[in-house]
Image (cartoon, rainbow, N blue to C red; front, side):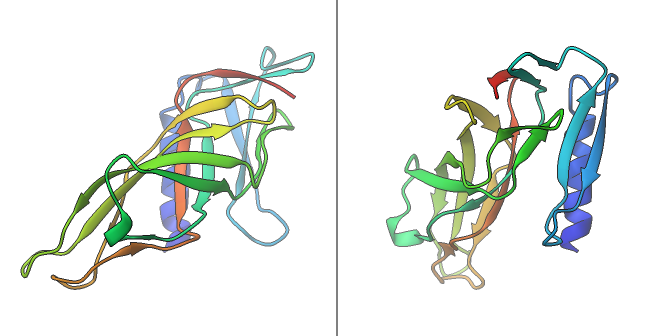
Length: 172
């Protein structure tokens, strides 16, 4: 099921890419059999000298660095993520695995006797190999309790996907 969801995410990421007509993504599985690494290749203009032009919509796969309990969760609280897989464009690493990404708790809805508790998190930026903070966007991640009246926690290691918000030039 996870593979189907990931493939759908890849298709959406490529379909929403503004440069989709001039780029052809290639997919490779890393040696641990983890999620595919996406490489965007373009006929000229994307890699020049020591700079890589990264298209808007390029995917970044991250994991939460710590668990967040509902009693500690407040909207606006900054949370940290760790990039899980290198982001490569034209064969050049633009975002390293283990790079720090930032996000926030967007909302917290407490549980009632009839409704489940919910926490919504979102990723906002990631550090590129040249040190700049790159703005990201992505789907909000909703985490909810199993039963009404029960508290919830965002587990450490929860996978979150973000996408480059804009076209970015990164020094490699």
